[in-house]
Image 1: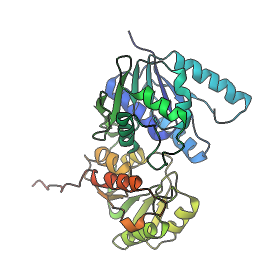
Image 2: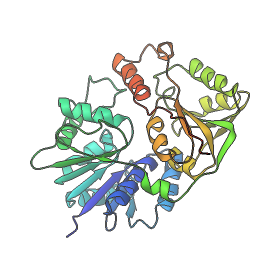
Image 3: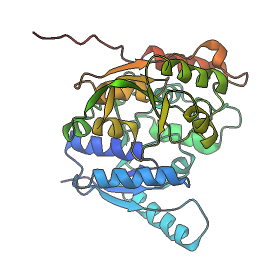
Length: 336
């Protein structure tokens, strides 16, 4: 007998990872996916596009705009609460989400799956193991809200609650949890991209707009890459229009804003044979997604002088870990 399964996602990447979990386990049919989009229009467009792409996997998608106080939002919140209260298995895309954390007291699932492939999943494992509040690595611990501590207790494996972490990252599962590898099998199965040799794809990150690194050295690094070959700069959905505009003004740089997560967009193609990623989730997912098509993914490190004065030591160490732990490019052998 199938268990009642409910997933909660807030971004296109989280929805993609739920689809990958459903494909990997064969348990997607009859699963209800609660989509709780943020207010920014770009994320909403990405969610809509991914929903179109995964049509056919059997996922039952329900969109709820619950981030305001309109009558419709209140009705949606009540429907979300009802769905969570009856779920035997709960799948979540972002255990650090304040919205999700506020909903967890409504859930009593005995089986929980975390599918977020973001590098914050490492921080998730660290917090759960240490019993610390689930607060993002870039946010100071002081003033952590009660719900963040409650979330840590909710996600802690116990005799009454089984936890699985579905991720392509190593060491992303807390002690007592079951790690399940995300090999992006569904994404790799439906498309093989055209690979081009006359430019470099550079993946943008949100480190500047999040106040972690300074703008000037970041833009200078993109400019330096453009001196080696024409650059197609794939902007991150959280990068500001001001930053993206400055990068677009650089000589030899062409900016694109995709309505799909980078994993789907580059797998769909075209993709450059050389892809450069700054420390980010993409530095870990793209070698998996593109590993069979002759594409090399390089990680551009962040030098110590890039960090802003406000960046904590823990944040600096975490950014370094993202770069150091990323898969290293392997030479492609020519077979005669």
